[in-house]
Length: 485
Image: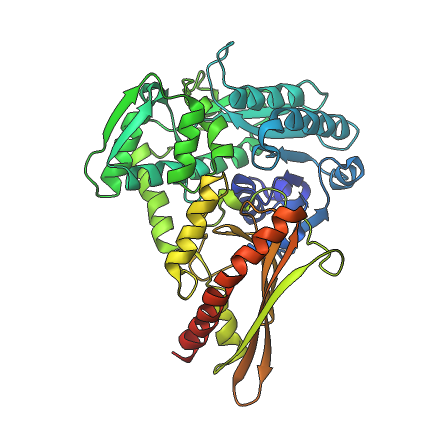
């Protein structure tokens, strides 16, 4: 890229807190571009090393808000559209994505934006295309129907640490030596490494011929999902998996099974499962011809992703994307609380570091079986349970998922608040507040808050209250013990 381009072009990234967008924004800043991010929750950007970059401008707002979108597009040359509402809108995602794309197209063509770049999904065209892939294609068509030249990239499974596809694949292979699968396991796909997706997304800025084109991107390997699973097993140093495809296993049943075994919920797994029936192989080589470069094969891509996962070096994760509901006004309505405290012999820095390690493989400082049972109960009724885990064993930031919680407040060495995303007849949060005391001790106040919905909510609270009496003291003693060391 020329030095003049790095000084002059201003880039907007919509979807910067998502899996691809969070990595792309960093790459663009490293290349020297001026980058603007339109984000619903600016606090989410604090987890990124580039979140305070001098060439970064952050606009708070949502794509539904035309005025916020218009502000974000001011003086913008190129806009990346990396928005997908499947996680937040669930069954209504196709209609929501249609409306968002239409609104963005119309606003962009009234702005200085000279080009839009969109990342969609591969899939054979035709009436049998899944709703998920059809929606991805439709968004691209909507954006290309406007006056702003739009480059549409189409990718199949993206292999990278933290991606929904990669984590689903890894957990299935790790946990199931014998798999009964739908017949789509024989379908061919052409996975692509996240590294190569990012290279294409950035490289196209310098290749004028890519403007207005639809470009299929994939790695060098085309193979069935069955073979992809066997490659994953080999890289995990596991025995070959026994895979038994049967014609009667529907996408709905598959999604329930995926939701039970992997960190991905069944509501997200279902559209992904339906899309697996479609062959996802590149239909043209325009991307390779216009932006030549060596792409990772599937073995190298899986090795790289596993290496990052094992090192805890996961830059972005699928579970961070999506809307975070606003904090309830706990001062109004019927709010039930359970407040407990303990004095910890250690500094606030040591104590907060311990509290910030909550969940995932670290657990909850005791009563592990009861937490597991609670997780199984939540999964059984369609909640996330404990299977989402956490991105990093110690590092934690606003907006990240921790098992069936979401971080809604994080003030270093002062406060950590987790909002429950489990299935509940009400709204719940678990709050930790720290205050330094004399002689290198810290007062920890742990408060569970619950706003019940009707009589069922009240019944739930009083049913679990005795369990609080068992679990919460164990947690606090565990925190104190670990800090004391």
